[in-house]
Amino acid sequence: DGGITQSPKYLFRKEGQNVTLSCEQNLNHDAMYWYRQDPGQGLRLIYYSQIVNDFQKGDIAEGYSVSREKKESFPLTVTSAQKNPTAFYLCASSPSPQREGPRTGELFFGEGSRLTVL
Amino acid sequence: GNSVTQMEGPVTLSEEAFLTINCTYTATGYPSLFWYVQYPGEGLQLLLKATKADDKGSNKGFEATYRKETTSFHLEKGSVQVSDSAVYFCALIPYTNAGKSTFGDGTTLTVKP
Image 1 (cartoon, each protein chain N blue to C red):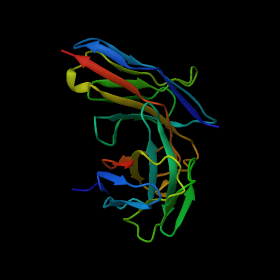
Image 2: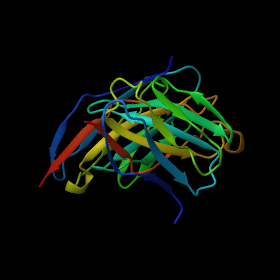
Image 3: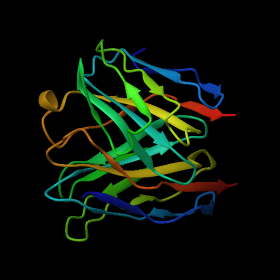
C-alpha cells in the first residue's frame, strides 16, 4: 500500500546526543515536510522540501537539520543544539504544487515519532 | 501573516449529540481550507476540504462550509459516535500554495456512550 513510513515510533535520547528520524514515502510526491507537535498546540513547521536536493527552513528550524538526496526520503536530525527536543514529530508529503496547481495542498501524514530526552 | 483560530477544547458530548467546532482564519486572497483528524497515537488524516468560497466539504457525516464573508470554516456533525473521539485540526494553505500549511491548535473531542 502507498503511504508514509516513519521510524522509530518511539525514541529515547540522552542530552547532548544527535538523533535521526526516518521518513520514507512511496506516493511519488515531490514535496515533504517535518512538523513538531507539542501537547495542546498545533503543528509547527520545522523544514520542508519541494524537490530533491532542495529544502527550506520552516518556522522553528533552529537545532534541526534535514537532507533530501532521494525523492522518497526526508530524514530529520535533531541535534544537541535543540534546547527542548521532547515532542511528537510528524512527517508529511504532498503532490507538487506545480503539478496540482493552486488551491490544493492536501497533506499525507505518517504515524509520527515520539522523541523523549532523558 | 496567515493564522487559524479554533474554539478551545476539550469538548465532551454524549453519543448522538450535535457537534460544532468553530474555526476562523486570517489570510490574504483565497486560501484552501482543511479539517484534519488525529486519533490517539497516530498521525493526522484529511477529513474534508474546500477550495473556494461557498464550497461545502463533507466526509463520514462531517460537513464544513467555506464562508469568505465571515472567514470561517466551522466543522459540524449531526450525530456523533464514540468512534469520533479524536483531536480535530483546522488548517489553511495560501492561494499561492507555497507548500506551507498553517494549523490551528486542535480541539479534543470526547464522545461518551
